[in-house]
Image (cartoon, rainbow, N blue to C red; front, side, top):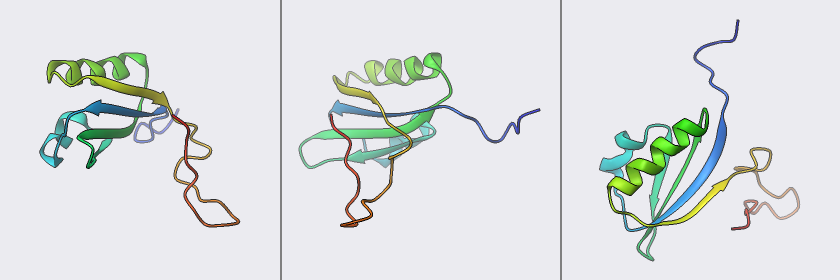
Length: 93
């Protein structure tokens, strides 16, 4: 029987037009919110299935925030650094 505390899922990066500050973090449990200087917010997190992803997208829609990007993140490289230069491995948008 799998450990119920360890939930497998798919990591996503979602970018929206508009700033969401940290008070919205509870509404997007499991996601980190990063407001950017260009007036956009990036959400990063893992969802267990497509229904959970649609739930997040519906919440954003309910707030009237236009979607700019919804991308599945390659978990193999997420958060890793280049072994040569030490820079974070960027993922293409």
